[in-house]
Length: 569
Image (tube, rainbow, N blue to C red; front, side):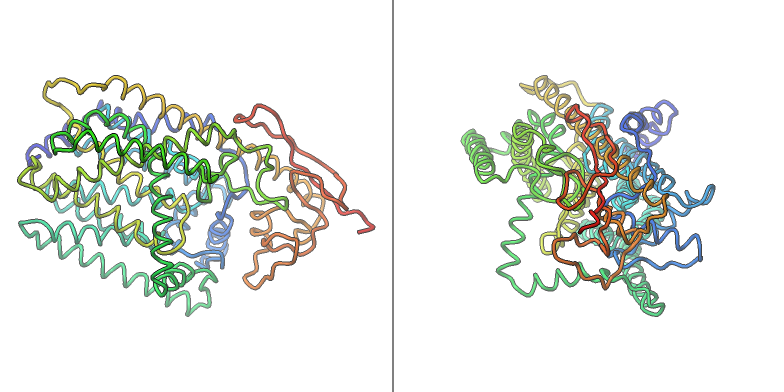
C-alpha cells in the first residue's frame, strides 16, 4: 500500500455513506446493550472504588483515590466526573460514560480497519467480534477502567497506523495525546510508545522526527508516572494497592524457576481465551490461511499433527476438569461475574451445563491452534521480506501490531493475570488478522471451504453475542434484585456496618485498608453481620425478605435472600 493509495482510501472512508457503514457495528452493539438493560444505581466488581474517587473529586475538587486502586486512574475519574456534572454523582451516569466509551472504541476500531484497506465484510465481522467479546460487552456495563483504556489505546493505534501509511504529522500528534490519555487510566499504556519505537527503529528508512516524538512520549510517560507517585505521596493519598503489581512482578522475577512455570501456565490460559474470542474471524480466514501455508511449504502432515494435538489438549483439559473458563474474574462458570456474597459465587445449581463449557473449550483450543498458525505466517512474511509482497508501510503496520501484542502481554505472564486484561490484545490481533483482506480485491477463485468457513464464522459470532447479551442481562438482573434488598434495608435506618451485603456493598460503604478479615466471614470489611444478603439459607438466621430476578441463560426466577440473625445468636 503506497502513500497515495492510503490517502485515497481514507478519502473514500470520509464519505457520509462510508461513515454510516463504519458506525453500523457500533449501532448494532448499542441496540444489544439496550436489550440487556444497563439500568441500575449500584457498583459492580471493583468500580465502587473508582466511583468513590469521582465522588470525592466532585465534592472537594481533589483527586484522592481509594486504597483499593492500583492504576493511575486520573483519566477515568475525569471522564466519569464529566458525565456526572449535569445531574450529580450517580452510578448510572458513570455507567453511561463507559457505554459511550465502548461505542466510541468500536467506531475507532472499524475506522482503523477501513483506513488500512480492509473490506466492509471483514471490518464488520472483526468489529462485531470485538464488541460482542464477553469481556468487552459485560465490562461496558461497569465503571471499570478496562473499556476506557481500550478505547483510548484503540484511538492511539488508529492514528499511529495512519501515520505509518500516510506520514502526516497530525496523526502522530493525535497518537501522542491519546497515548498519554490512556496512560492516565492505566500504566500498561506504556506498551504503545515501546511498540512505536520498535516499529520505527526497524524501518529501513529512518524517520527521525517520528522516532524523536516516540522517545518524547516514553520520557513524558515516565515523568508522568513519577510525578503522580510523588503527588500522591506528598498528599498522603497513595493507595494501599498502588504498588501491588510491581511487587508481584519483582517477586516472580526473583525466582526464575517459578517465573517460567507461571509464564507457561498463563500463556496457555491466554491462548485459550484469545482462541475463543477470535474464533469467528479465525474460522472465516482458515481457507485462506491454509492456502498461504501451502505456499510456504507446510505439509499436510503438519495439519494432521495439529489436529491430533488439539484433540489431545481438549481431552486433557476436560479430564483434568480444566475446561473454560480457566481464569478470573469476569467470565465465570455461571456466566458473567464476579458475584461475591457470603455463600460464595452463584450456587452450583446456577452453573451453565457442562456440555456448554466443553464446547467453548473446544472452540478455544481450535482457535488457539489457528492463532498460532496465523502468527507464524505473519512472522514468516515479516522476517523473509524477499518472499513477501508487503511494502514498507504495510510491513510497518504489522510490526507495530505484533510488537504491541508481545509487549503488552509480557508483564502479565510474570505477574497477576485476569481475563479482562486481554481486551487490548484482542483488538490488536483482530486487526492483524483482517488487515490483509483488501477493500477491492482482485477477482480470484475463493479457496475450497470458504462458504463453510463463512457459515462457521457467522454461527460462532452469533453464539458468542448471544452468550454475552444473555449473561450480562442475568448479571445486571441479579444485582438489581440484590441492591433492591440492600437499599430497602438502609432506607429503614439500618447502618451499613451491621450488614454483610457482599463485596461491592461493604467496599463502597466500609472500605478500610487496615481491616483484618474475621474467621468464617468474607474479606470485604464485615463488622457486624446482623443482616446478610445471600442465595441460600444460613443456620442461626431467619429470612426477612427476598427478591426474585430473571435469568435468560436458565429460564427460571431464582431469588436473593435477606437474612437477619436470630436474637439468640
